[in-house]
Image 1 (cartoon, rainbow, N blue to C red):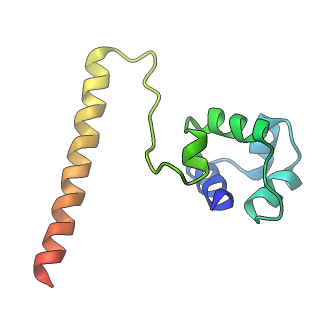
Image 2: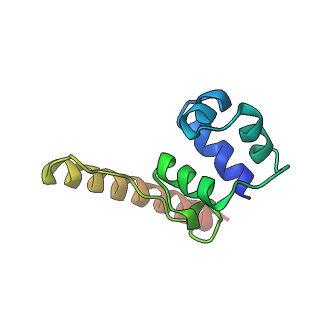
Length: 104
């Protein structure tokens, strides 16, 4: 699970294993080993991964499925726009799920 979280986050950030390794101060092979579930990152690296990807360690470990967005530096109005966008996307997703359920 952790291996998939690391890989999916890295890909969603559009960075290579080498780029992530450079950001964390480890080797590319280390990132590859984490993503292939050969070894687990240390607690210190888990914290660095969470900080880099702006997620919680609980999210990385699969204990909490929530994701957060860092809106530091945005105005209240900009934050409100993001909140509205997220709420609209969630409503649309829930509506699509309800439609599929009633169609079956």
